[in-house]
Image 1 (cartoon, rainbow, N blue to C red):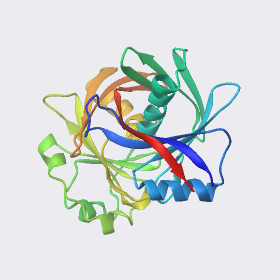
Image 2 (cartoon, rainbow, N blue to C red; image 1 turned 120 degrees about the vertical axis):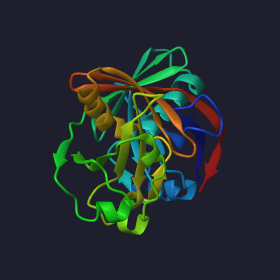
Image 3 (cartoon, rainbow, N blue to C red; image 1 turned 135 degrees about the vertical axis):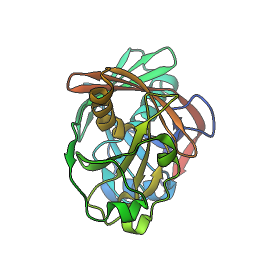
Image 4 (cartoon, one colour; image 1 turned 120 degrees about the horizontal axis):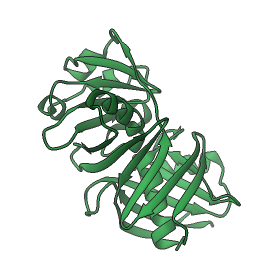
Length: 261
């Protein structure tokens, strides 16, 4: 029988029962892909992160309940929380090797800052099926890497979205990011990913690799504050650094234990 430590961490929030929950499992060596996928399915959270220590830092991988993904922000933040706060890492910055290249996470007091590659979006005139799936008409549609970014006139329109997830899963994209300006924040957003087994993600760090460059150009500023207005909500500090972005937030531990199989 194999036993592994597991940590359930709420990312992008200082408070319990908010932010985006992720499972984090430190490993001494990689398990098979099939076993890691089964563990992620058993956890049934939007993401389970596994990491292994290397000579240069850590190697990290992320699994939804149904697939492995190339990048996940909130589970990276959750993993950094575990490494800093529970495993006692003494440095100021972590370096993760990943399928999306080298990623770093710095800690300043209680805040964690993800340094990720920026993704530039390209506007498209239309996208077949998007209006029917979203039950709404955006003012702008953009291809944003493996996601689709749709822009609305105001926060009320974004908060009232009620997508048809069956139709949305047929859109050729990892997920759909809905966003608008906000009175309280620089911008707000929601993220829908039924194609990868997550109908709505509470706070999606990887989405901000697309949102930050977009809103920086629109608003004419490099530092911004944002909120992902899902039911659990999460506050995100944002900064554009040329071809990189800083995605900042807090985290808190909800549960720790062992899994056996």
